[in-house]
Length: 327
Image: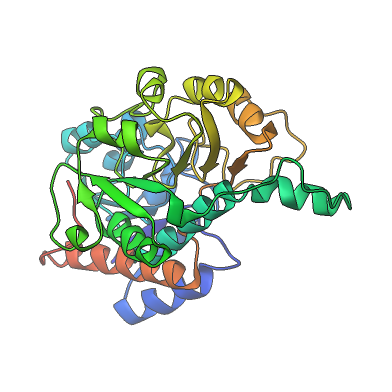
């Protein structure tokens, strides 16, 4: 039972891969780089491939299939970086490895608080020994309405966490959840745009909701609205967001994800000129906090996704029911 593991981080993942592969009786072929056509030969003889958020396009899927790969698993909840049509075409099954909701939910709440309390600017001033107050007056959550888009496990946890702050909460999801109704009222997206002082995104990225936050929807929002995104960068039209921040329509943003982040995050680019003008502009604003797609990154997440991704591989190779198979 052989699995090719890409994007393996030696400082936090290696020990868990070694432990769980031994427990599950799996042989690993490991690579610290993202998969591409130049290193696809590593998958020869492997039934399964284990990746993170690296894009898997049709050409790479075909190369995997030619090497005998039958199952591809991503150590993430989302799998929008995988060409599912190509996977079906070449007979490769796809799985994910959902981690617990608390890490991302904690991070989303932190970004909300940092945004309404102008924490980025406060920290910048403190570092420069500027202890003045002008321009850093914040708001209190109890006075605000928070709109939560997406009430899956993470969205529900955010709502539960925020219930202790005394804020009014409204929510939108295609499928309503009774647990959510204890703390929040389900409304339409139009109501979210019109009523929310803070909007936080917790929905998967699909063709239907790509650029859900755009010039038109931002125009329907309250002046000074705060936007938080710990889901997927493609949910927000970056150019529209930049324009809205520049004119003051959007009062602050907390972004753990951005458009065009593939191939950028999780690598050291401090000496590089990046081909992402939108990211540079967003990072320059004093009222925008940007982090590098790491809301998920906790002790519990690291071991959980490795354990479950490898367990999914073993179940697939044994022909048993795999709860993590998505396509």
